[in-house]
Image (cartoon, rainbow, N blue to C red; front, side, top):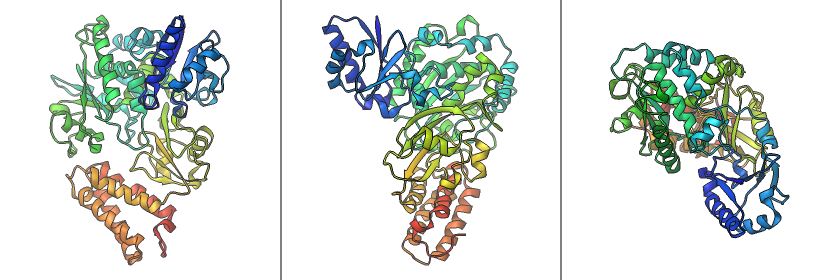
Length: 514
């Protein structure tokens, strides 16, 4: 029986993938053809959605930008046999965009049925969990530490060190919290993995629980991801039915329960302590540290907090060993990073590669440059609070330390491209405005500083006493960086300072920027 794959990823759904899948099923039935329509995750080539793949003897043949209205034409052309057509891409695995990637975290996304545990196991799933069950907690933590895995949420803190702290803290209850409050502009990897391979996240969280002695896990998902929430809940129910979760994980006698909690739409809940407040039913506001969540976390108990990409890398590390993961990357940036190409870019989507590719190659060779065809003016990495980088940074390697050396940050791996029509004074103002809008309000440098920042930038652009206002803006940025409780206020000066430094003309500046 012929298998036809139509993505159920939110991006594909927004382009009419449900209608395409329905049209294929209906027309095949009318023609008396027996087919199976599999709703898979997205391959990450978002400019090709809806992407339809047909399983053939040679492999899966892809058809790009398919609409429901095209199905009659495609059926007549014989696309169920992989026949030629204007929309035909050939073998999907041979496409340059995919062939040159190193997919570890996203190894199954777009290939398997996200809600088939049988499919998941057939493609290597649960191997890491079974390995972990046979190990001591300390050995699991050591394996994660040796792999060099670092948090993919922003700070890049070594996951193994965090886990070890929780392991060695005595408590009657411990928690594993996954922060899936993916709020950065230009980021969508968490969503795509939760929708396209939820069992990978579930497996990673169970392994984390075994490693530190936690029996309860919570996935904190932003309310703007209704489809991801639905898929996760279905996957958790399936895992419970098949004893992957529950009182005896895979018959081991180890207990681990998991549930989804939905956020209320606050950007600041991407910060770990604000997320904990929200999980406890309180307003999402940042906690002062110390104590750190690894010691005093959810409901005052030791808590491991990692984001989706961090936890989803764990099953491979346990399955193939720390050295296999450590073999990828550069310097202290080990393994792979799931880069998200967005903004004004020709080929936007997911790219998983070892750390070390240069920014220029990532944007120009992999991403194909701007969609508008105009020159690239700047690239922002790490979300709305990330620095802007120009052409003089094209040779910088994509890694934690290398980006920090040029004043940038990796963050969650979002890469947003702007062409030469963008006004950087407006972008700098947006950074301050965004901070003012999303600040939890707990600390003065963030709450008041961002509001004053908007006003000062407006005065600079208006040409009012620019020398004095530039000095005032720099002082304000310094106070926000050094005095804010969390990265919300602490990082807002990054895009402002970088925009001023690289593009003073956009601010109408007639004096030298220090």
